[in-house]
Length: 383
Image (spheres, rainbow, N blue to C red):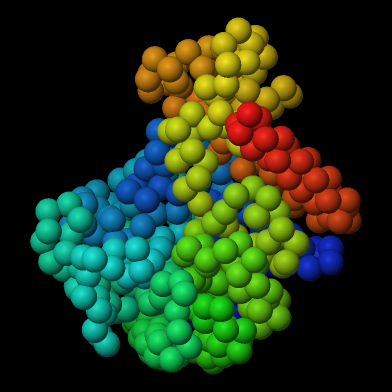
């Protein structure tokens, strides 16, 4: 495990909100940060050059999916994931632990790891803590995630306690394997605990005894109500080291990310920007907006006035709607570019507000506009 200052530099706090810098082999990452999701070595519909233009400082890949297809041998032959996908910036990879939760119907869990049936061709393969670290090392990940068990929600206490014991055993094996490989990559541990505050505390305390480069809050956004999600963040925050990066995995909506920054979290990822774009939905400071709205048919304005993204700089709402209705791929790409810009710009503004000592004012203004706009959109849809 590297010393804290070699991994993360905390620059400023404003309340619990934090601005810092994560240090990786492929460059520094200013935090708070949103990481576009490139599950299968590609952020859907967006090229690496476009990610650079969007100023995305780091992206995310998924070990399970890349092991299944194209396979580690192909990626090794191609010189690692960075070379394979033409991206020279930092990459964080999920270990495959989330698939323990999400692919329950095609996996068999043991104390040693998980036997998966490939969702592509049904072929069986094994992924355990040692194998997950070896795979991420082969990928060349800048930030590897420990292999954990992500229990479903709701989860009874007895089941959660057994799951935590397994997650902690696997975390120790992951750390030992990182030691064997020579610490070429950063390794984050993942705290679990579900709805149980004391188990959240216990999990993070156990992980810190093992020692990791950063720490994640796992087991959120797995079907629980938002109030339970935020409760898990609140229960975890006091036990996350201040001198290490803090990562909340797999969420969320823009207002959720802003609220979590205010709770002291640093790193976020979510598939929503490109997923909702494929349904023709644009992200705005007034909440999500459907490009299919009748008012867009002859609207000469951009998706969002004043937005500096490529889509808003060049095209009208009328044109974007036409593309969506005509099922032209360009329409989905333009909204994806806009949505990613919106997410990335939101966290950039959050960082600037923290550094400028304006966090309370900025976040209250953002959340007020977003939530008011969201309610207005919902009301309009019902009418």
